[in-house]
Length: 255
Image 1 (cartoon, helix red, strand yellow):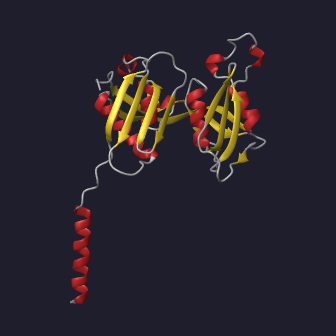
Image 2 (image 1 turned 90 degrees about the vertical axis):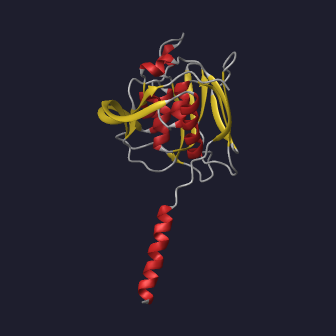
Image 3 (image 1 turned 180 degrees about the horizontal axis):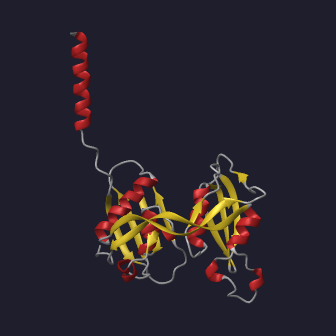
């Protein structure tokens, strides 16, 4: 009898737990969305406490951040092209107490895009040509990160070259950097098998800047830079890639 009663109590507790609804996702309590005025000294998105600030971000850039995607993972549909390259400034504050995680900020930005930009999306798999990032024949030239290394990537510009500093880079982070900034003609996938974090310094010329200045012999293609500076290679392959398809998006509603 005691065993049966104990089992019944456990079963009842489990049913009660399963019956409880999950807490609703966090949302922005207030949000200002405005076209960016004047010149563009920098393009930046950052968080501080419960606040998210985006400066001079296009709709495409906001979608990439909200869904944590590379440039090549968002399909350029007609609807997306209609909003153009207008840049926006966003200042938003999360409701509730406590500092949201980066994942929570991304989820809240997804909700904001759906509400203010009427964004509708779906995901699908598509086979396409890709560049696979692999280890070179002589092995990687990578230095492991210090335990307290800065996790953020920083990109400087010197002439036509980009100078990338990633003190605590994963291969996933490196692939995103190459995909978003090098302006390649296809997605980049990590096929290195490297799972650590590395202190990466990379200098290269984005493809859209190659041979467009007075000294083209100083250009360093991303293919050469990756091989000579990191001991990795970019090789052409075909693969199934998940992409985000923008079914509908509009210019944002008024504040």
